[in-house]
Image (cartoon, rainbow, N blue to C red; front, side, top):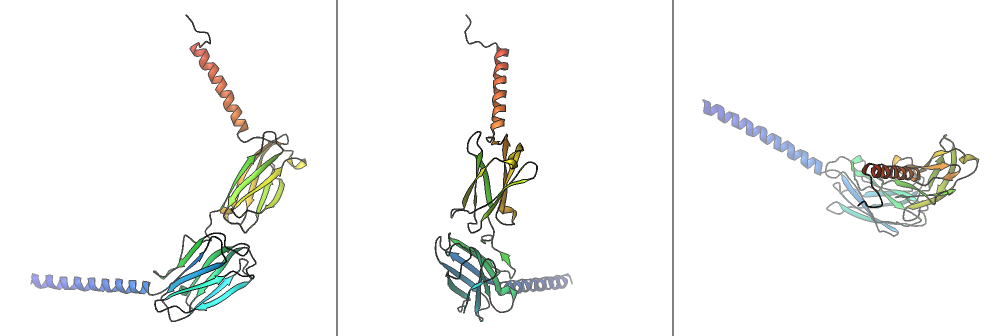
Length: 286
């Protein structure tokens, strides 16, 4: 009797295990049999963009649309048939129609399902690509859209330093770097009382570096204290940076100047105190 019960229990357990395994296999097969992947690559300096990809739905052409950074112009349309393995590749040449500087959107679409519609961004400046790029978007394995961490739209941001030219100067220089060379930078200086005393536009160089000289003086710079210098390139917080510059009596105070003087004073007092306590003398005693 116990043997029959044991045999029945084992059979039920094996059946349950088989059902779980079949369900898992079906889910895995389902996950691996849908979706698409695309990758856009460019040279450091070039006029072509190569897009490669793979799709599970290889019976329909893949349609490509290239849209300008402003979103107002379509600068490229094309389509291609995947091979028997679902692989495809296409090349776009940057032409006179690519007049805008910034990130061009390359959209790939196959059929009507959102699983077969992906987008990558590629930066173009003055009709060329300025750096090597490899941007990938894929939902091929899971059927769920997961943006790649290497997407060019995920930015490093902007950095800023304020450099005093010399002690007692009526001018200081602002320098920094950005990874977006196609967009001008707005520079703003705000006085301690909140008044805006300077606004300027700065164009970054091809290396991403930028600089601007700010002249101190006039009725707007009369207040003593720390003036806030802010640079902004986009609304993204990563593209906003600020620092402070101290102005006293209409001239720039060297960075760390006050702190350095305090440290020097403390050092002198400490030496005098230690000398008095230990009765140090320049002339040795005999």
